Amino acid sequence: MVAERAGKILVVDDNEANRSLAKATLEDEGYTVVLAAGGAEGLATFASELPDCVLLDVRMPDLDGFAVCERLRALPRGAETPVLFLTALRDVDTFDRALRAGGDDFLTKPVRPTELVVRVQTALELRRVKAELSEHYTRLKKQRDDLQRLQLQKERLTAFVVHDLKNPVNAMDLHAQLLVRDKALSPSARDSATQIRTNARHLTRMILNLLDVSKADEGQLVPKRADLDLSELVAAVVAELEVNARSRDVELRSSVAGVRVFADEDLLRRVVTNITENALRYAPASSAVTVTATQDGDATIVCIADAGPGIPVDMREKVFDPFVQVESGERVVSHTSRGLGLSFCKAAVEAHDGRIWIEDASPGTAFCLRLPHGS
Image 1 (tube, rainbow, N blue to C red):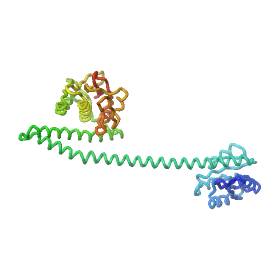
Image 2 (image 1 turned 30 degrees about the vertical axis):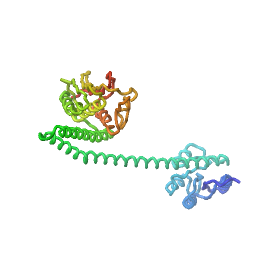
Image 3 (image 1 turned 120 degrees about the vertical axis):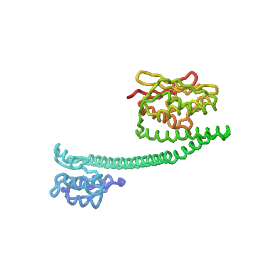
Image 4 (image 1 turned 180 degrees about the vertical axis):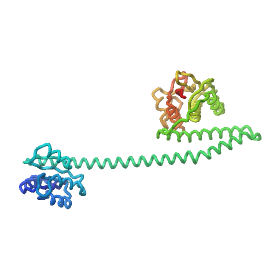
């Protein structure tokens, strides 16, 4: 005896012999079979029995199979239940009408028992696959919704970092400036206040980097370009980092006289500051970090070089990814605590339609960026 299958089949046909043959064939295969002698009875039986598959005759006296199928599709579970049309009419018009009515398969009479079983099995398997795909779709949609929720939470966290931390950091910088200007302060205390100010400015840049990297991810980092004197911008960066350079016994040099660029002043200044500060961090004592600029056709090339151990060639693209740590000898290119700095630089340069890359400085590393001219 064949084990009972997890399937109930509704056979709707006004011909008793056809119903009996379908019932006997399918029950031999373990299916549960319910019968209906006409279209109206078939709809009522479907609503009460909720079968897994329907065998539906086309030509019936009360409602033809096409009308039954159209109404069945509007019933609960009717949309996903496979419908197999049975007809003695073997022509394209009948086939097309069956498809338009919502049929899943089309068998011509007389139907061979083996073919009937195979078609029912196929219809049920397709129904199972559709159900699994629907489940996968639901799961994927939930994952998408969860990711979107995380993105919104990230944006809220970014807003907190930028708006709620920026003000106290600026206040720290302001009070440090007041201490530096206090002539009654001892030299060591003034140096400490200067260091506080340097670190406060660095923290401000980290906060702004986080905001701008998030903007770049969303395609919203838009530079406010203007004609700039690059030598003035670089001189301001050198002045800001001079104390840091002296504390490391590193000389800061620049050669950018007479060079102008069309760029966002704030973004470009932070790019140059981030890269120069990174170079200072890894430059050996008694060496120099140099900032140079040259014209290259319709663009300006800015390079910031140090004399450190350098960055392996196979890691030069990866250092611009967020929170990447690359080691070369004793050199760590990007710590996780500073990991957004180079990512911000790449985002800011690309927002200017430019490019940033790494070259050998022989010895050391040169970070170069190409800024196209504009108007």
